[in-house]
Amino acid sequence: MLLLTIVLQVLLADLTQRDIDRLLEQRGDAVISSTNSATSGSELVVPDYDLDVGIVVYDEAGAPVAGTASASVEDRYADLARSTSERWVAVGESYRLLATPFTTRSGASGVVVVGERLAPYEDAEHYSLLASFITGLLATAVVVLVAWWVAGRALRTVAVLEETAADWSEDDLGQRFGLGAPTNELTELASVLDGLLDKVTSAIRSEQRLTSELAHELRTPLTAVQGAADLALLREGLPDPVREDLRQIALEARRMASTITALLELARTEASVLPLSSIALADVVADVVAESASRPGVVVHVEVADQRVAVPREVARRALAPVLANALRHAASRVTVTAPLVDTGLVAVVIEDDGAGVGGDVTAVFEPGTTSGEGSGAGLGLALARRMARSVGGDVLLTSAGQPTRFEVRLPRA
Image (tube, rainbow, N blue to C red):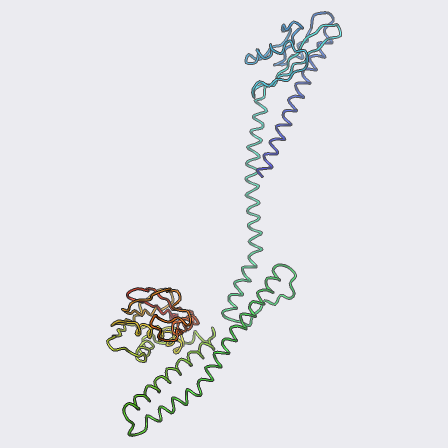
C-alpha cells in the first residue's frame, strides 16, 4: 500500500503538471488569437474579454499593453517581456509562467505572458495524499483482519488434530483419524499423525509387554526363594546367624516381590484404572520407612498429614522407596519425611537428609546407571522412582542439591 501510494502521488503530480501546462497554453493561444483578430495596424489591440487575471501582453519593446500581473511576480513577468521563444518559468512552488512571442497578420509583434497560481493544485495533492494514506491504512487493516481470520480458520483444524492426537496418545492408543488417502494438506497431516500414533502405540505396548513378561518370569523363582526361606525359619534349633540370614533372605524376597508387583502395575496402567486407586499417604510412607534399611546413627523423622493420593499402592511405594533409600545412604545423622499441603492437585512428599549434597551434574541423578561418588548401588533407583511417579501423572524432583539435600515425590491428590 505504501508503494501504491507513492506511485499514485507521482502520477498525480505528473498529471497536474501537464494540466497546468495545457491550461497556460490554451489561455495564451486564446489571447494571441483575439489580439491577432483585433489588431489591424502596427499597434497591438488586446480585447478585454480574454484578459484573465495573470495574463499580460507586452509589445515588441517590452512595454505592457494590457493585463496585470500579481505584485509578487511582476519582476518575473518583466524578465519575460522580451522573450524571443517560448519559455516556461517556475517561480518556486507558487507560480508557473509561460511566455509566448507572437506576430499578428498586420505585422505587429509582442509577447503574451500567462501565469497560474499553484497553491490550489498543491492543496489538491495534499488532500489526495492524506486520502491515500487513510485509505491505505484502512485497506491494510482490513487485509490483516481477513488474513488473520482465514489463517485462523485454516489452522484451527490443525490445532484440533494436534490436540486430539495428544489426547489419544495418553488415553486411548487405539484411536486413529482414518481420513483415507492424503488428498490435501490436512488429510496428509492426519495420515502422518496416524503413523506417529502407530509408532507410539507399538513402542508403549512393546515396553509394557516386556515389563510384564520379565515380572512374570521372575515371580516363579522368587516365590520359591521366599517359600524356602519361610519354611526354613520354621525349623527348630537353627543357629542365630543362620536364622538372621534366612530372615534377611525372606525380607529381600518380599521387597523384590513388591517391586515386581509395582512393575506389573506400571505395565498394566491405564487411564480407566488409575482413578479407582485411592490410598492413605501416611500408611504408604510408614510402610516404606519400616521396610527401609536403616543406618546406625541416622534418625528418620516422619511428619505426614492425613491425606490420600490417587495412585496404586505398589506404584506409590516404589516411587518413594528408592528416594528414601538414597537419603538414608547419604545422610549424616538425620532424614526428614514431610508432606506439606499444596494447592496444585498434587501431594508433595519431601525427603531431606543432612548429607554432603549432590555433587557433579545434578541433572544426571535421574539417569539410569548414575551412581554416587561412593559407587554404591546400580544407579537405577531414582530413575525407576521418577518413572513410577510420572506413570501416574506425578514426578520426582531434586529441589535442593546442597545441604540439606531435598527430593520431592509428587503424586496426584485423590
